Image (tube, rainbow, N blue to C red; front, side):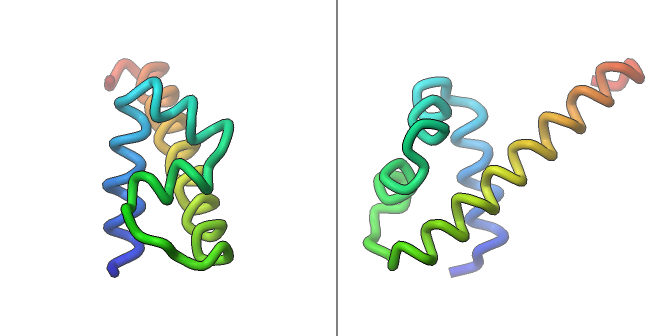
Length: 72
């Protein structure tokens, strides 16, 4: 599994679906298990969840800065 690619895909899904985003923020591990459709060890899911949180936060920051600069 290409983790970086998977993080990008999942981040897009989570950002574009308010119910999914809410579920991820409340319970990231069960939400990831549901999205992935595979049973991974808890430690791998935690790492993936942290990567997704970082990606989503970076994207939000980029959108905010782009909005400030009029580039959105």
